[in-house]
Image (cartoon, rainbow, N blue to C red; front, top):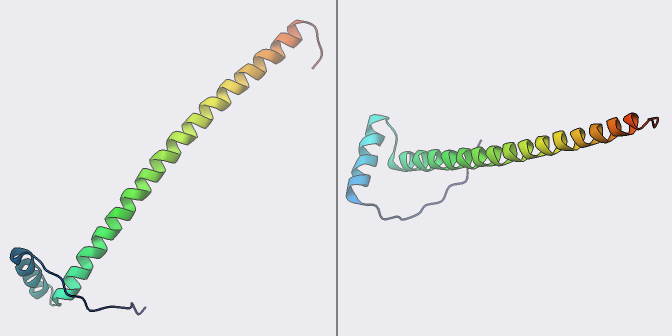
Length: 90
């Protein structure tokens, strides 16, 4: 898969640039790849955080729905029981 790339100019603190160069040398790649991989990892982490947030939201929605359904069923059964107790047919 070919990914479109663009050349950019950025300013980094010296210690981060030195770290990027050191890491690039260790893994035998270039500075651009190190920075690209760091940003890709940050993006993946953010997407995972958002997914977890969404799952938690929908889980609580699901619990609320289940509780409402239990209450509605209990009320329906109570009403049906009252009708049967009064001698009415279902």
